Length: 130
Image 1 (cartoon, rainbow, N blue to C red):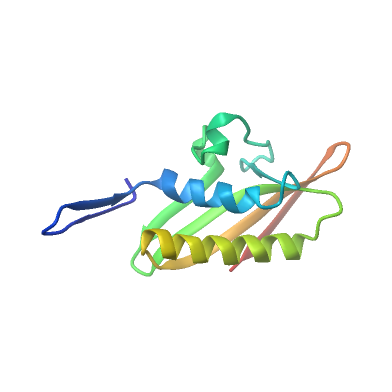
Image 2 (cartoon, rainbow, N blue to C red):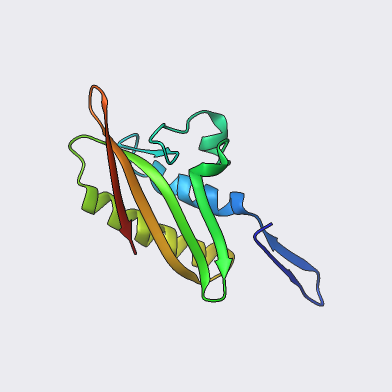
C-alpha cells in the first residue's frame, strides 16, 4: 500500500497499482509507439501490463515522500518518434491525472528511455525528469 488515510467517514487507501494504471493509460495514448519496459529494456507485455499491474517489480519505482510522489519508470520508443515529445507528453499527462485521481501531489517524474525499437531494439539509457 502506497498511501492510507483514516477519516471519520472511513479509510482511503491508494495502492501502487493505481499509479501503474495511470502510467499504462498515458503510454497507451501513443498506440504502440511507446512500450513500458523494465530497467533492462525488455518490454512488459500481456494482460497485467494492460491493466497497469506490473509483473516485474523493477518496472516502476513509485514512492511517497514528504514532498509528494516520486515516480520513475522505463519505456521503449519506436524509431521515428521524438523522445522529447513523447517524454514531455507522458510527464504532463501522468502528473495531471495522478493529482486529479488520487489527490496526491507529484514531486517528480522520471522517464527512462531504455531503447529505440526498429527492426531490432537499440539499447539506450536516457533519463528525462519533469
